Image 1: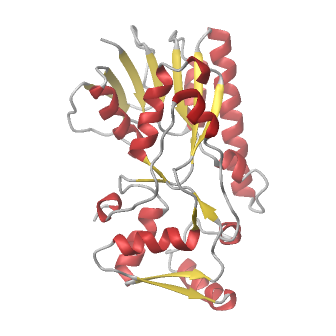
Image 2 (image 1 turned 180 degrees about the vertical axis):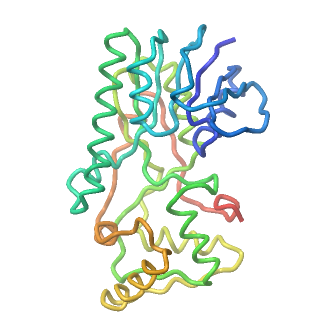
Length: 284
């Protein structure tokens, strides 16, 4: 029976991945700083990166958490494992030229982490793959669509500026977990980073409308002219309801953020679903 070390196993992608590995006959060691419920085929290890030593008899390592933290751990840990699969983010490209210095820093850290991971893997003779998701949803734990759903449910409405029609590709956590497992036996994916978007490109406004339509409270979608939306957003920022939603994020609502899944389809049979949200995907 093959055994994996899974970082971020308690997160939204990690939990889905543990289930996929167990179904495929793997056992998993999963570090976590907090106590976790027992899962079939999983042995939880207490601690984060700093407390995780290099275990013996590991066939693969998966990282479903912060890529920069994992890349540092991997560079320092004397681990000999043939396969490494890590999740990054399409932000490495999408935010590289952002007007927001914080967003540019995020992109730079992701790029540095990817470079470090691949360099360490080459030195150790390991095959490494990085998967770059877009807007992740499905477990009710994401910071974008679930946040929209909860705000809309609470206030019975959600406000957007007119013209928020930039294309998005939301991707379900189960499709990402399946992609990671497929990479295990796909030699062509070694040494490469792949965009792993969802199976449908949806205008931002339509994406939000579908989320709201899936909720039991059926909140309204309100579109405002830019000056009026700026006033509403300013008030939301003052009350802490728009944390992390800066001017650069507002500008991107009108921009297409579309990534090519064809290399992932070709190399490991990536097959993401179309965006058909249901209330349970957002914790309702």
